[in-house]
Image 1 (cartoon, rainbow, N blue to C red):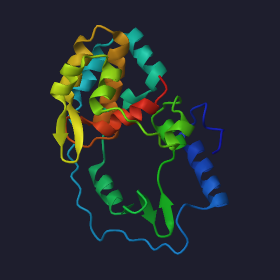
Image 2 (image 1 turned 90 degrees about the vertical axis):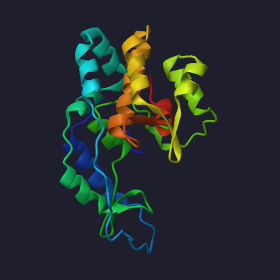
Image 3 (image 1 turned 30 degrees about the vertical axis):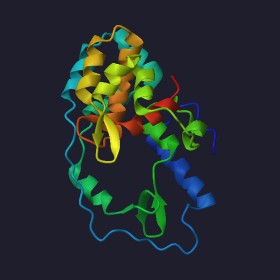
Length: 221
């Protein structure tokens, strides 16, 4: 792992140049003899979460609370105003490689690195080595939510729902915590959890998926 991007935020052009140089020197991760097996056609639903409530909450916060957020989670609130190009998104999905969980163009595989995510999200505190290593977490979803929110187990357990193959918590319950929690630190943490669950890695509309709490454990707070 290169160290030059671990402790600072670079602009996208610098990260792209670094990534191309590294791939040129070390090659990509395709196995020898691998043949791309892209789907002939991929159907994708581009329905997005409604983010106005998140924007309204952010707009009402004073500068002190916003600075507390920036110090822990970087500039991810800027994503609330990013407009998704649905046509480009649909086009990119046709190159998604399920075998490698990356985009494949001919014989080149492409997926954002942790360094690139650090730059795109303007969040320099991602612990790269911890994020790359898979650590077993034996805690239940309820327990992880309790640790993040400091809310009682009965309250959390009563609000967890099953969505297809995973457990989720509806955004409306997290919204209520962001608006009413007595601990400012917890309001900031829950708001960040909501952005990760509704904007960056959405799975079910208006719900935050259990996998997001696993990611949250990796972030330096």
